[in-house]
Length: 319
Length: 201
Ligand code: HEM
Picture 1 (cartoon, chains in turn orange, yellow):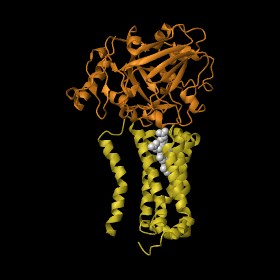
Picture 2: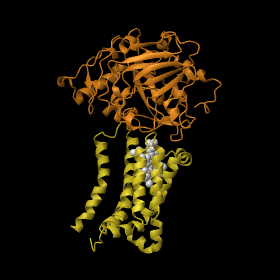
Picture 3: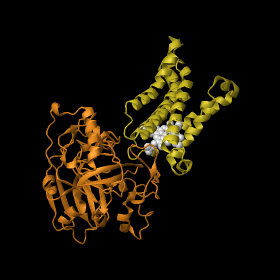
Picture 4: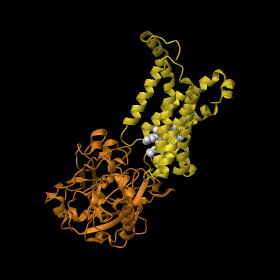
């Protein structure tokens, strides 16, 4: 597998809106039948200066994908984002991330493991088979999407570094670059850089994914380029973007949200219709594109696979 | 000149509403239109409350009564946008799910205070006609002084609902507080000391 460097875009390559839309329809239709890896070229999104990254090749389909749901359209996924590093408004991530550089990118593995290391992103990903994983994404603000991620199973990655018996939790840290990320400068209430964590067995769960692409192409800046975490049974806040460091630690770490307000945000943040956030009822959600809200499912519909991680735990207390 | 100013303010006050309709027809309501409309109408309801509250300080500062005749209309526009805001929540967001709405009002403080603000705004809108002013006499003024606490509640509503960035509601709170200070009789006395009193606008 190879991640191509992004070439500067010549004006002749800029796709006009109709091309883009028909191409998007094409993507939506073909994404489900295994052709995602064959699309080439660079696209420009209307209304933003962001290049939609290079096509990824050699992607396999995963049996862990959610298959019975309509994919959320690319325009919504790429213009409606909570990526607070770029600002609090949903459109800030797509309009203010043009100057964010994601190559070269290094990622550090450290802490309670036998083989810590620092990698160039391309080298780090090379040994892995890319998979397409279609997952529901449920935001804590009670909206949701269905997204065809491309990535590598987190467990496969973590095993390479041979975590030792002290490794009880895994922490993920987002890049800190206030000069390129205006939200890190402006929003002083959050403890930058963004830090999130999973219990080691959650991190090793087959559903946990490190995503490097979406809709068959490189991740766009607004979606967490070049590499982000996706944990489909947890709220979206548990999916840090633009990750630079992954650490194995022995004690449950603070996360950006538990530091911000431990009464509102729990360490686990599992999707749970029975446990309300003080501001949002979690019983229902609005699927982006739909008018009427739908019921939220326990563990975002992944209960069969993940409920056993939490047997015997009071999920109202450990929310 | 005088004749056209009032209709001009009227049209101007409707511009945000027309803009919203324009956004709708040109697909600019983002991927989550209901959230966008809720925020947009909530913002404008609050702006119009503050604009309405700015009339008296304006009189104090300029020494002119010229703006007072817009006050009632501006207050009604605050109600207009608050009504759109509440209807968006009631119909589009919750889709008449009364149980969920009542639960929201009872359990979520930001909805509790927002709802209170809206309920307090209702009688003001209903009694804004000339006839009602006559009929209620001095009680009309009393009733309409509700606009001060309800605007405070609306700002609290905003402050409590933002996820992490409280800068905008705090800024609006500072504007609100300044307007409250400026309308105080003391402000008028100070002004009269500092600036010569103009005879007429
Ligand atoms: C005078 C009355 C009211 C005013 C001035 C007002 C104002 C506002 C403002 C300024 C916002 C934030 C907009 C933004 O983020 O840009 C807002 C949001 C909101 N308001 Fe109100 N509001 C009022 C009454 C109500 C009522 C009665 C309800 C429902 C019962 C309500 C429900 C909401 C909801 C659901 C949101 C969005 C919350 C979110 O996105 O998390 N508001 N309102």
